[in-house]
Image (cartoon, rainbow, N blue to C red; front, side):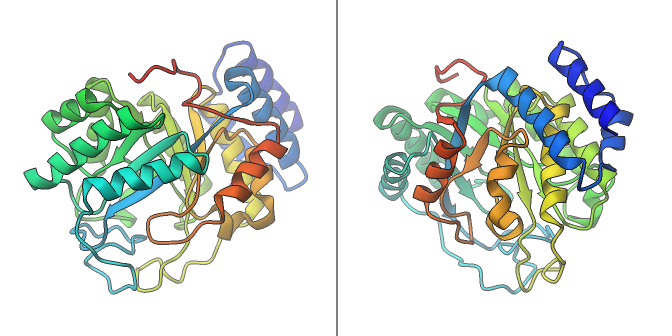
Length: 335
């Protein structure tokens, strides 16, 4: 295993790519071998992104009542949970949240709306105006996660200053049917491609710990690689009572760190962002995950769950020698 880790290191640092079978073999790394794997992944991160790290804050601008049956989601109308349900908030509140996020150390701000998509013109105009104002009144990069959008909506948001669009694949192609049955996997793949075609940087990742195999995790990473995804959020299931996955047990923290390291080796130039569920699942090993190749972090609270204080996260990043900055590996100009 150590010989393979060193072989992959040499390949990637010299400009090559890890082979699928090599990545699959790395999932068998033992707890004693994971620190070596993490160190190599971190070396790859330093080569392609230096010490820069992104910090992104989220705004849940519309919550609950989603028509889709994603088995992990507390906002699905198919399940009875204690998740908040409320209509879309207004422009002033969104912009105020963005300015507060910037003050706490965020470099990006993502507007997240539950549901299939923003089908109301009034709601879409609110999002459009919020993106315009965030882009002009703050130093933040404006992102959004609005479900399925039309090509026209994507281009309008791009013109308004949108930098990234998040649309997670969530799982591998083979496993997705066990996670969601109300729409096909290909719809998500097509949406990621549409964002890129519109000139918006695509952001897409998944959730670890939903019962998938290590092979499924590798398959997801290679799918994201094929799509040339700019930013990859790595979420870890934080089970929500009332959902079909509400009683699923956690995966070990070292398994998460191993996966983060393998993702860095598969996606050497993408932003790898530790996202939802990190506090619950990684606990005291969050810093180790950042030293396993990650170069991004969701700052503050999540959509329906609390995170830890932004001050703690910013201090952790500083202690690790990171420089919190605008999106890494790309021009700092809003594309």
